[in-house]
Image 1: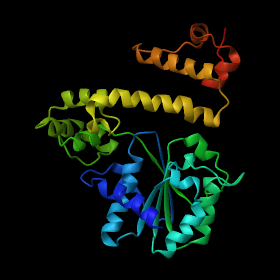
Image 2: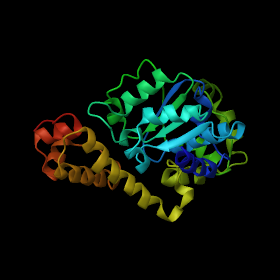
Image 3: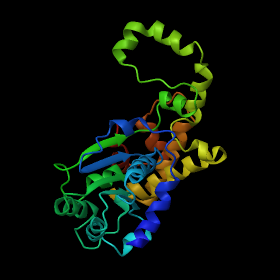
Image 4: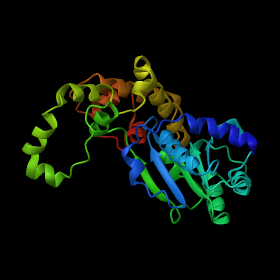
Length: 288
């Protein structure tokens, strides 16, 4: 067990509590089983680590974080670890990248193990996250009646402003915007240059990892896209290498054409897609 704590504690202790995403205060952390879904890079791991750090500040080692694609999980099962950790006083288990968990038995995947851990250890609260939403939906275990599910998006413009110390403002209801938009806009722009900040947000604001290494932002964004196309989609759908390359070409066409109005017939001709592959990629074949 000391190997688990030696893995978990340094990761938890490194995370900063200076800024928390909007979802942090929305989640009911008292639920026994919490699911956090969202695209790669939106901040799910940081969110869980922040919660774990706050818990361990109250009671040391009561929260443990594990990434299920780590080598530790190739020889340990979720259920066995949950049983041992509970004996050591752990009350909160944070499991990251659950869709990458290497199953120990056929037809007994991460969701089946989490279900059994949930049923067997009522004193243990489990929070898990995953980026491959389709693969999570295909889990074998029935968690629907047990889990509290939350979806995390990238940073909003309001969060972006707060993150960079430009403007810290509570969310505004649509009804208030409709009725008092002039007063609200005047208040917001009185001391803040909104347009330059918004242009910066459009360029690099959606993913919160920009400030980690601004020079490598687009490289990291490209890596995320490659992982989704080359790993996540093939894991849940029977697509060929050729189709994955055509997906990349399609993204390149969309990214370099503004405004973009898709024409499925032209797409079929440009990317040499037959009707069957077009259905596989886009859901329907179009006419012509």
